[in-house]
Length: 82
Image 1 (cartoon, rainbow, N blue to C red):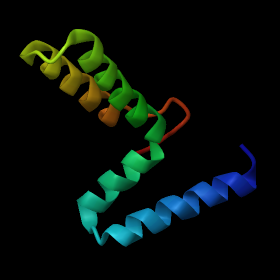
Image 2 (cartoon, one colour):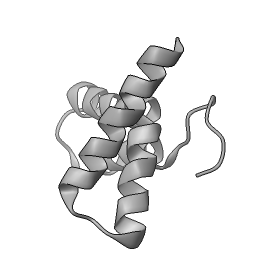
Image 3 (cartoon, rainbow, N blue to C red):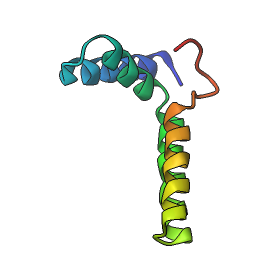
Image 4 (tube, one colour):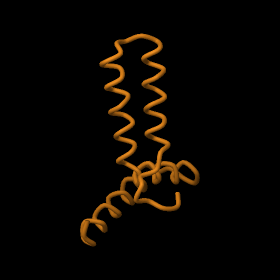
């Protein structure tokens, strides 16, 4: 990824966080989610696949929720810090 595209992504992330009006810890959480968007998307996709393959049962729904939570909490391998 070149410098121009990195700057574009940083600017987009900055504008999205500023547009939410969040402050403090909530702002940092949203910023962390936007930095780690790849694992977040992967977790949500895994949850959707689990619901599709496992059917709409309580066990499948709980497993899908855990997969989504893991994806949202995980950090991309190429990121450091928060």
